[in-house]
Length: 229
Image (spheres, helix red, strand yellow):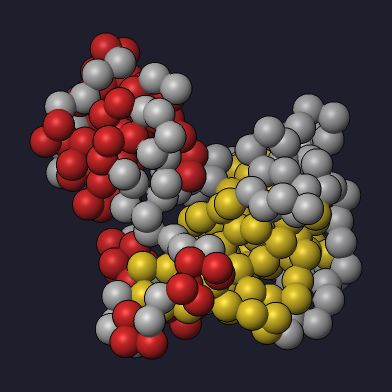
């Protein structure tokens, strides 16, 4: 994986574009473009990315096997921490709900019962202005968002972030169905629900559906992770 590919992966992992990445790093979008086009980044900027997002510095600079995203821990790693480490304030736990968001034609919601929690570094949520109690983790079901999201991936959504920004991924409710889709606002007030998989056509939510409460934005995706069966 090249430097350009690693930068692209970071933006995809966090559902941000070049301008948003530049803002977080206090630089310009042109500088981000230069890193990608030249396939090179200074150690100073790579260190800043490491500090802001929690990626391994050596992986950012050189690639290899160090592509561990340090801002999240899996449950096994969490359990390996001492009780004092778990309570030192550096980590927060986000509930994993018994809910599947359809990446297909739609899935009826199940009971939103907490199954377990996943640990995240507190600084990760703070840097992205995500209220801890508004972050939720759910599972993706279906293939309509491939290759961006795969069946059984887990994602975290910020339920406080419901303002639609074109091209971002959101969890939504359409009638009684819960889905995960790319949202695009249209000039006539309607909203397009778009999948990454070209086998799934766009779905248009008209103004009447919005005004009647048949459509609801549940939150914006800010993190995702693939898991094995």
